[in-house]
Image (cartoon, rainbow, N blue to C red; front, top):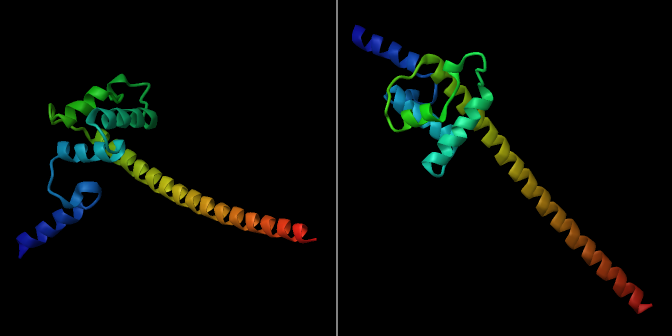
Amino acid sequence: MEFSYRKLDKKKQGKQMFASNLNVDDVTQVKILIRAIGGGGRVNDFIYSTFKVMSRLFPHEGDPRKQWTERRLKAWWNQETDVVRHWQMMELFEAAEAAKDERKLLKAARRDHAEYIAKTTRIRALAELVAKDEARGMAER
């Protein structure tokens, strides 16, 4: 009984972020976050876009050792290193949440714009019908 109780406590502690319900190591979780931040496409493209996002959100201008580099992200992606520090993981989580929120806002904006286009198309069609009807009424007189 005691063993299962401790196992439940460990599961509760792990359910905090993205890949928490999976049993993955840090580098694999970082790869998931890099893909989430950078989006899809070619590997170099989304690593570069992840680098741009990370250096914009977390510039670390006073401490050059903490600055985000494209090389660091590539090293994690290619599994050349397995060192992921806590602050790096936390910043990646924050950036992934921000990217998720941004994509959600973009999706809503696209939906609103599509509704606007459909509405203006209907109004234009109605205006053309009214104009034809008025022109027909003038022609009959």
